[in-house]
Amino acid sequence: MLTLYRPGTGWLHRAPAGPKALALLVIVLAVSLMPSTWLAAAVGAGVAVACYLVPRIGLAELGRQIVAVRWIIVVTFGFQVIFLPLESATANTVRVVAAIVIAALLVLTTRVGDLLDAFELGLGGFRRFGLDPARVALVLAVAITTVPVLARIAVGVRESQRARGARAGIRSFVIPFLVVSLKHADDLGDALTARGVA
Amino acid sequence: MTDQVTTPRPAPAGIRSRIDATDIARIAVFAALTAVLGLPGGFAVFGSVPITAQTLGVMLAGAVLGAWRGALAMLVFLALVALGLPLLAGGHGGLAVFVGPTAGYLLGWVVGAFVVGAIVHAGGRRLTWLRTSVGVLVGGILIVYAVGVPVSALVLRLPLGPTALGSAVFLPGDLIKAAITVVVTMTLVRAYPRALRARPSVRA
Image (cartoon, rainbow over all chains, first blue to last red; front, side, top):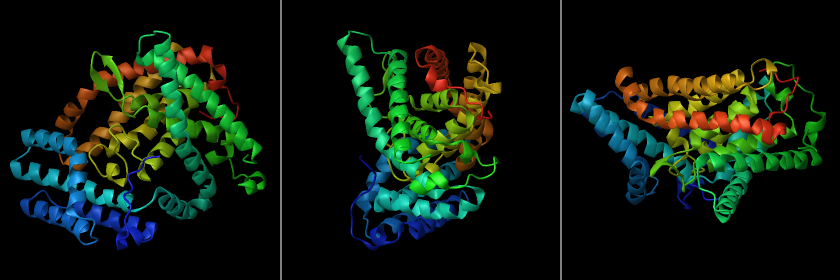
């Protein structure tokens, strides 16, 4: 399945997923807690640029990330400038966008599989509360493989409706889609049971 | 995975003791369903105004799976998003969406699905139109906004009033989705009764 990962060989790509996630979270938190001033906006923008330049991800990628959230920028700024002074509106928008593009670095430079492993490792601490990390990882892995299956089911349902000349509406689509998906879930449950998952 | 069979089950305090293979499959399928409902090629409801059907998945997960499993399905969906799968409507994903202005709504989906399930399946009785409607409206809309708006206000550093006003644009779409969820759930009771199997061990 398509992911947000961009292949690369830089040190940020090679860094272990867990510490990388923690480090990026700290930076994002620091940026998020800055005051709503011109100076803070400049610092936030500078940190975001540095986060893309220092690991040599490049400003082109930063540009792509900003374009991807263009509607958040338009809505956030447009809405803020009605209620707040220009300085606060600008600083708030810059801060939110900086936090978003810095956080995006994690999935840009880490494979889903590596993140899943780090996630399972991190969940180990919750074992004493009755949480089984292996079981959580199993659910996530099953869910990841189910997305394309359901996407195929959705296309199939829509095509068979079109073949019968039915009008494409959300309600007439959802019921058959849901029934076929639930049947798939029951088959999946049987398959898991057959493989020894209680 | 084979060691699961003999793993001693923790005290009833843990919800895990009630999560069997069928539940794992259903939780995974509803997480995937929420993802598929957000894929491009959305549905035209009023002429050509596109609305994302993703919150439909939130309401359906609670109404069909019940409180705990519905909330778990949402947690699994959000975990997939956090792991970098572009599953949110518009192809968004990654840790970034959890620091943006809409992060609260994502959290609200988990709480909302729980509340939908708790009300719709209250007392483990047969589903009624009234209880399903109330559950979907309270859990799927009221709770989601109650968590989403304050977080949005916090991230944007805006007063609560204007933020709530701004998010009201999505209210008509959510009301349509709530109506669809109620009709779909009540139809499902007849079309696929196994979907809402009564389980004596399920608390809420």
